[in-house]
Length: 467
Ligand code: NAD
Image (tube, rainbow, N blue to C red; front, side, top):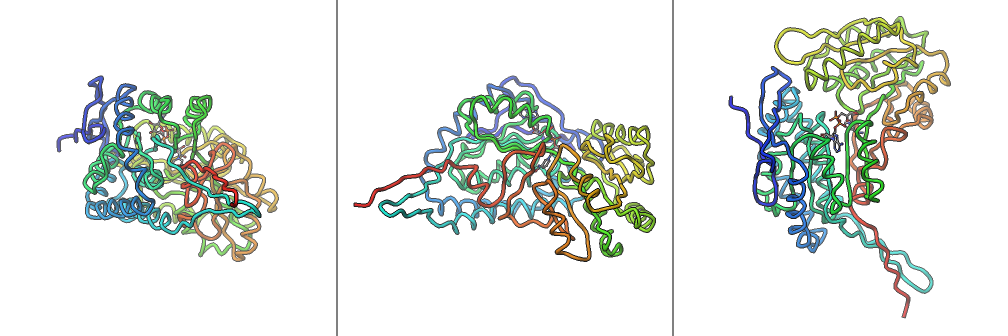
């Protein structure tokens, strides 16, 4: 198959980068070049900003209900193309087609349906005083920059696009250079659904080039970024002096805590899934499992057995596999034992079998740094206080899970964890109305429900004195 020739979606046109350069997009399943993308830069951002500025006022003039209806039409158009979107997502990420279809793409469509419905359900915000009435308006920001990573490419992008459009903004999206295909197809579907081309602009290329130019552009007053903590720091350093609105969804090192009443038969499948779904490449994956020392001999063989039966998938790239393998070597240097996994397997792709490491100090680099691959470290603890100290003992604070026979006890433990999200006896159970985001170095701000509507708008108060 010839590589797909991806172009930037700017206004109603599809164009190559102004500089004419292109980048290869390599598929992780077999290491072949599946597409080439424009290597965009500041000039391309300039064109996208002009297209967005032309389209945004008419969109902002529509009512919230009219914009919600447009989101539903976009969801319909995506639904009709869902199998094709899943094919492109699988090609780019290496995940199985049915996972791409029934997890990623179904959830992308749901993002639009959810925000359409959520928008319609909003009531006017009015605050009465004795002698006046306050009316809160949520005005569009204008043009928003949306920067997304490669692990759940279209899902994480549409999680930003839907509320951004709903609130009356035009968007300029910068998908990861490793997974550009669904964002490209999405730009076509948005136009097919009737949205003005200038509302949904998609620029491809490298983060430090086109991503940086987007963050630097003075006419893009808000940036919603999902990616690594180190990149988030650069984005923040650029945007903060310009007083841009900034949402940062960053890395994590999430703890999975088994309390001493946990029924191992019941919890092990959930613990394995939370560690290794998508080859451990979900920011919410539980990559540190904390187990009461008294239960360790019972837990480890069951866990290792279940991990060995978990499907092997590729990680995103050759470079990322080398990084994960480097951490496995470091784990041994740090005193750990690799109980299973870390093998490449047959074939040309970037496969890596799920790995379990035991015996590492909880303060070791492997147990505190984000690896973002199929590696889970297991640690024993004696008291709940010790488990809590280990769970809270990293610079991250994104998510976590607690597994117990007593849900109330689990909730009490969860409340003491320094993370933005905690699941008790479940994982990745998502209600789109609730706040999503991390504390400490895992991010700034929240997405989801009201939090997304708040980020993608400027709340303005108008106080009218009584006659
Ligand atoms: P990354 O930080 O390398 O890249 C993310 C995006 O930022 C890409 O589109 C990239 O091109 C762009 N970028 C890079 N440098 C930039 C710059 N200077 N200016 C603007 N944009 C720039 O992250 P990644 O490797 O694509 O994704 C993996 C990371 O994302 C992990 O750390 C993971 O935990 C995190 N993540 C977080 C969440 C969350 O919701 N908190 C969700 C998914 C992934």
